[in-house]
Length: 125
Image 1 (cartoon, rainbow, N blue to C red):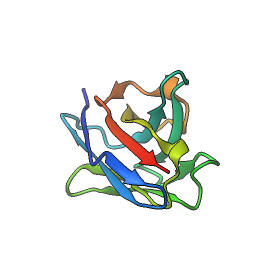
Image 2 (image 1 turned 135 degrees about the horizontal axis):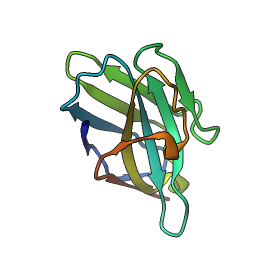
Image 3 (image 1 turned 180 degrees about the vertical axis):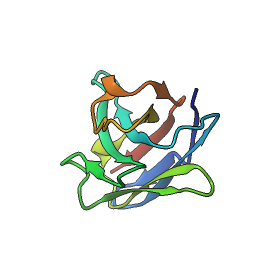
Image 4 (image 1 turned 90 degrees about the horizontal axis):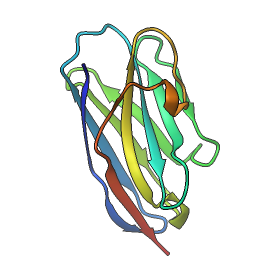
C-alpha cells in the first residue's frame, strides 16, 4: 500500500511558478514509478511528468518540457513538481500517482495503482 498526499497548489498569474509536493508513505518497495498527472474540467487525465526511483529515468509531456521539473527527496519520501512559466492552459487538478516495482509506468495513467487526492492549480492570464 502507498499513501500519497499532494500539496502546493494554488492560484498564480501566467508566467509565475508553483512547486507541488507529494508525500509518500506506507510502503517498503525498493523501486517505484511516481508521476504527476492533471485533469482539467471536461478533459481526460493526462500525464505531465514521471520518474522511476530505481533508474532515475524521467519522462515529460511535450507541453511541459523545459518548464516543469520532477524531482524527489529520498530522505523525505517526497516527490516534487517545479512548475515555471505557467500558462492558463496548465490550469487543472494535479494528481500524484505511484506504481510499485521495477516496471516503468511512464506517463500512462492506467499503469498506476495508487493516487493522491489532488491539488488544484489555477493560472490566470
